[in-house]
Length: 487
Image (cartoon, rainbow, N blue to C red; front, side, top):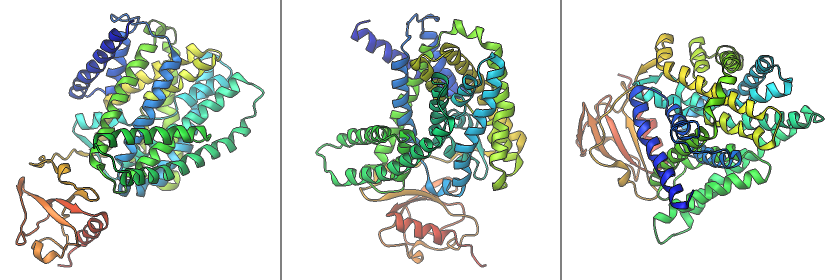
């Protein structure tokens, strides 16, 4: 295939994935399922007839794409939201993943009559979750989750891939080298997590420093610099035997909490990169599978999927969250939201690369389990949330009549705040508020109407404020706004 034809095919597949995502949103189908379907249809077993059987290329593209997806998730994370659920999220991302892998692995070993090590390898590969598909379904069905469920699921999904990667590499070593000792992997895991966390914390701070201190002649070069910084954090951490995935996710969270030049435009840029990475990765992984081979593993893979969804994930969630006294309804929904996504398919290429025993069977089985998980859980999450009584109507608000992000000068933060009912500032004119120095309210939405405030503007409960200022000033105003009136 010539270079021109290759670019044309890649562009058409990407465009088809974008168009298909609109259809998935309308039907409430996770985009992952649609993107994989596009790849399968374009592959050698589909009408597209594109033959692709290069696990190394797929793995490389998948790993790089996953790194940028995790960074985008980190930089869009609100630390104030995830801080209350930090312990629960870390527990789910570590012990929860381990329990899921062990239980699923035992079932996989029995279903395929494989050695226990090979079964545990399958369990490790399918042990991590994917929240991107979950929230696309929630948004398309106008369903939101009450309390801390959403940030908890976001934190778990963003931080559980390193554990799954570690378990996959560990069990793959046991499969390919039976003389290996499982206990030898524990210090390696601790070192990987520690190096990854340290690199993420340091890398995020270095990235902020570099963006603020290195002056570039063209604004477009800052996007190039941010791409290079993310790639450098991931590669350097991996080379140091740390978890590069954990590093880029933490680096994104660190950067989200700090001010740096072109912050909003760079965040939007990485959101776009994440979408390109997701579509491209899913389509390539869809190309890699041969659908004609799936029926040979179908019924046994279905048994493993049932065990994963109905036993392994719920047991892992309920046991892991026991110390945190999470209500059973919320734990049940967290169990059901355990969607499998791109990470398991990427991890399934590791045995292919190592030419491990039953590598093709493992890949086809994992791919089938992911399809079942997305098709079943992804389409029923809104129903499950309503039946469990943990859903709330998705709040729809009118769009600001201006582009708020364009108002944000370098070094400033622009945030949207809502005046809570009973706040001490309700009924108070802006001139009497005594706003922190350098902080101003740009726009106010009251009962669906937008106004440019003046000193005499009086605030009311549920008013939506667009406030501009430095982070400390906005935090001080939020704390003042949250004080309940004594009247």
